[in-house]
Amino acid sequence: MNEDHGLIIVYTGEGKGKTTAALGIVLRSLGYGKRVLIVQFGKSAFSGEVKALEQFGDQVKLIQGGKGFVGILGDKKLISEHKQAAIESFELLKKEIMSEKWDLVMADEIIGAVSGNILDIKLVLDLLDQKPEFVDLILTGRGASQEIIEKADLVSEIKSIKHPFDKGIKAKRGIDF
Image (cartoon, rainbow, N blue to C red; front, side, top):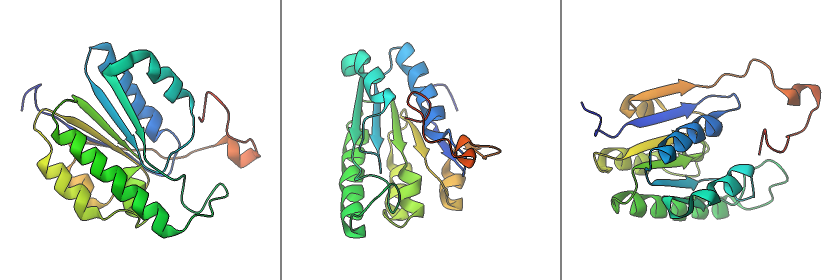
C-alpha cells in the first residue's frame, strides 16, 4: 500500500470529539492543497466550522443534509423525514465521491444515521467497496458496526471520561459548535 491509497477512517464512540477529530484531518488536508468534501448527516445548523471553512473557497464543499438530530434537542420531525433526508444526503455523497474531484471526503454522523436505523448499512458498506482508490474517506458517529470497523484502515473510539454537561454546563460556542 502506498501514499496514493485512499484510507477509510472511522471516529466512533460515546464521547465528544468525533467530528472535531475528523475536522483536524480536513484542516491538515486543506493545508496541503487537497480538495475536500464534507457531507453532514443529522446536522443542519450553523456552527463555527461552517464559517471557518468558507475561507477555503472552492477547495472545500460542505453539504448539510440533515434535518437535525433525531429525537433530541426538541426534534419533532417524523422518522420518515429523517430517513428521506439521510437517503438524499447519501445519494449526494455517493455522486460526489464517484465524481473523483475530491481527495478527502468526510461523511459526518453517517455512522449515527446507520446505528439509529435512519440509513441502511448496506448502502454504506457498498460505498466503502466502490469508492475510488485514491479517495480518503472519514466516517463519524456513534455505534460503528463490526462490518464498518472491519472495512476501515483506522478506527478510533472516543470515550467520555468527563463532560461539562454532567455539571449542567450547556454547549459552548467555539467549543461544542
